[in-house]
Length: 143
Image 1 (cartoon, helix red, strand yellow):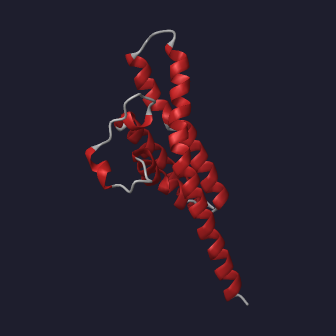
Image 2: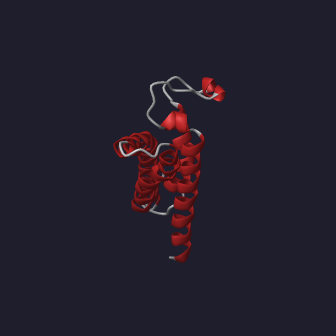
Image 3: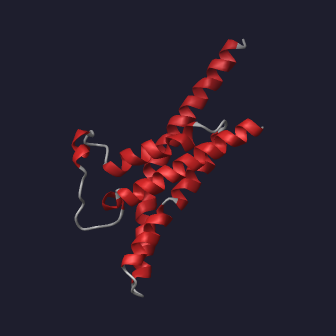
């Protein structure tokens, strides 16, 4: 039980820290803007994979793959998606201290969350497929 809790916590904290830092570093790819500036390395990504999707997949992988159970992975992914936008919005709000910006911050929170949600769902599906195939293999070997 203690080892499971450590794996869950480590996966969650690694993903939350990595995604929060990535959203701050690559905020042009995450925050809503009329102009999107792609990093130079993004030209090597496949056409169907956006910068924020790729970064999200890398950052959320520990939260999806380290926990023992699928339910724990889902909770870790959901919490990371909900908490990761907060640091960039705090930094962003310091630059724009107007009263009208609150609606903009709320919109940006939802926008960043949407960009983080797509990789989280992709990783959850992969984790579900892996867990399902393990269960089938285990059931087949016990017969």
